[in-house]
Image (cartoon, rainbow, N blue to C red; front, side, top):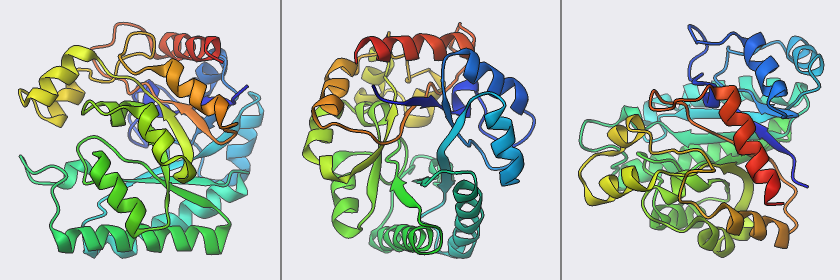
Length: 284
């Protein structure tokens, strides 16, 4: 069976401080929900000392899957900041026993009405940033970096993902929900680019919210606020097809359930986390 973890974003934890849950509460609830692994979450939420992080995880029978970093990849002035963060994450993640870092574009950086829009110069900057980060992580820390296509960024549709794979050597952290948000078929695309998938995020989408997004009635920010990312049990992503493909290909890499918390949810995160895990386990 796949080893399936979760992530702090499922508890609405997007920033290092001032969250609804403390680090101890989060880790306790991840374990309570039945998980054995977790992502790091925003740097500074969980301990940034590797020994303390390992102790906190081990006390609950948990292990670290990896870390995810969101960055303004089309802004060339932030290259130094990216590499500084990559160094910090590389040291922490490797010292804590993981070999995975995920990066993605920062959608909130773009001007209103142009979220994810880059010109040719901007695209070259993105490609350069991805290459630099991947080379640093592999060369200095032995870490396999993957790239996460994400709704509302410069890499969200299949043509953009195809171009990124063509222009770089990076593999994907493939997120089933973000891929499906524009009506794309996750399982079909996964099969197409299978050799470039190195990490998987499980997520689904709400049919009605997606329809409004595709029709242009709302933008990507409004779609997120409206709860486009539904529980796996309620969304329209064919999770059975995704799980069947992973089994067919004997996938043994990292797997994370992300239930991006939003005010539209009526169940507590620990309840949703458990429900999503039980559902996926039923498909294995």
